[in-house]
Image 1 (cartoon, rainbow, N blue to C red):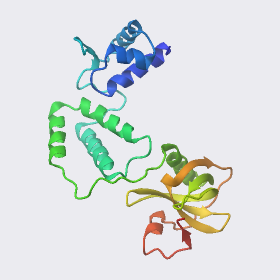
Image 2 (cartoon, rainbow, N blue to C red):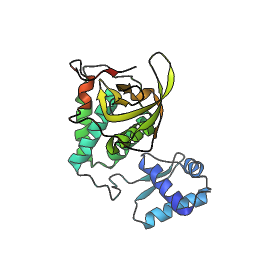
Image 3 (tube, rainbow, N blue to C red):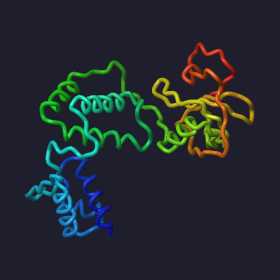
Image 4 (cartoon, helix red, strand yellow):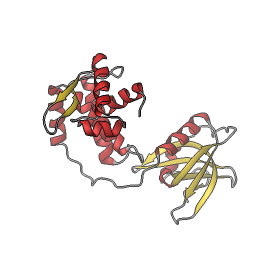
Length: 242
């Protein structure tokens, strides 16, 4: 059984995803009985969270429309900008990592639900009139943990050990001094140096199964522009993308 505080917070998270949640569903997700669910709902109401009870065969609980959860407070224009960014990012495939596709959808649903009707109508008008010239991209995406580990190593100039699978299916464990992350043609890449062979590398992030930070640090080259290394005009040090 979930501890009371954790259970109440989990209940709030479930309700924030939108729609009506039945008593049976909430009890199952929280691992408690219906009586405890009602008690958790009472705690939220005591905290001025507007939980509504919906009667009927398909009834349950939901959050009142327009409820905004502090401390994150977005203006109407900010919320609209975030939603459009999520929609465009999902459509292009450039803002999604493995495990985060659902997160972007639930985030959009939460923001959409709390928009005032006048702003929601504006958003709907944009989405209904919006068209894309390209087909939706269906490209492999990197693991969230890998992306975050590599980004932290880039920021702090720390070497990493990675498990990498080449385009030909060959797996290996490599050490990399990562210089930067690049999103090119809707694919994620990490540029860096392989100290064991003395070559620069440009590796696809979705082919990295695991990334771990190693002790020590390194100095990246002066005047480094990681994005240039994926340009056809790049004429710098030898680079491998195997």
